[in-house]
Image (cartoon, rainbow, N blue to C red; front, side, top):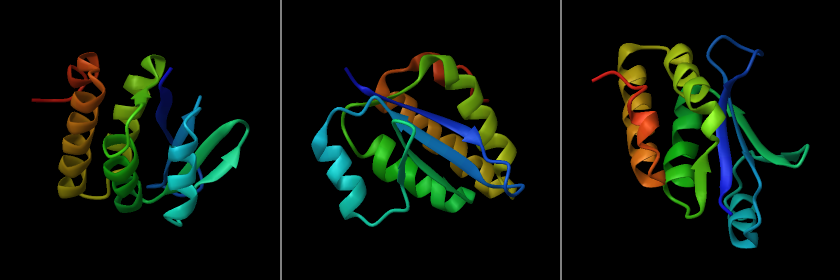
Length: 119
């Protein structure tokens, strides 16, 4: 079974988002999160990362796209897209976030997520 990820708004600051990775059974991925020194924390049976868009985008590239066995929680696809769109601080950041989500949905095979993105 693949680990599931969702992207949610973080309420601490206007542009901060939160990534939750749960159902992780692959010890290699867990060790990768620890070894890279990323600011992920293990909380409530999920690995959690929160940050400004540029830091969240790095995690989308290196964790969601870069590591095997991770898919988006089907029930959170719309929330993940909406969060990336709402937390962007500029038009360029918005486009970068949408492009990363496109790549992530293509990697995970979740084409229904592609339908939630403009264009």
